[in-house]
Length: 286
Image (cartoon, rainbow, N blue to C red; front, side, top):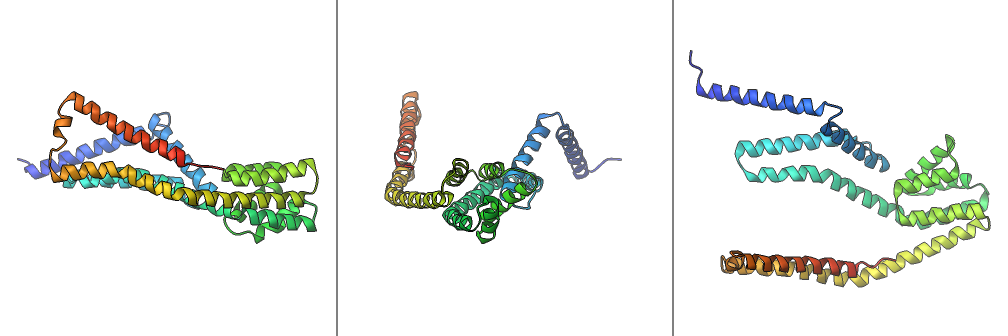
């Protein structure tokens, strides 16, 4: 009995797919292997990032969706022979970490906008009670998200046995904001050295407010320079594209010999170096 050619191809493709899947499964389930350790490390990184932002999503779910997306892009590209599908592979790999980074940046900005009001509210609460823990308990419901979530977690740590200093240090380690670090440092130092803690917090809030105002001034003054840098960075690339579009192979004599390739590489290096140098000049920090 002769097996039809289409069925033979289908059977061969099925056996190959089963073999590849079995090999991948064997490598992935080996707990001592590099693949399993890298997978576990990546999931742990996602879980920590999501937990620090109080998001209920699990890192395993995001990693599995990434894996499925990469598989679908590769399968679609191989089946249709369209190279456009292969561009979805790096998109599936990069999009979730970039989205988490963007969400954390937005959360950090929202926290830093509420630090001055947090210090003033805490200072007012300390006028009614001498206990910093009680003042923090009175302050937490009055704060806006997401700072109230961070402070609520610090209060829960204090209730289960952590000291005030350790709970506030854990809060600073979770948020990783220089502005919040300065606020908590003034609170901890003022508590340890004594003195008028209410006045210290009010002074710290005024100082942070003035620093925010100065950062806004610097940002507005350097905005024009940043826009000029963006235009100047794109201008050489636009010129090269226009010359090559108006006259095809315009740069061919330059690229068909070693000396021309070296000149082009040197020009590209100087262009990149000028952009990096200009960014460093415009990066003014207080």
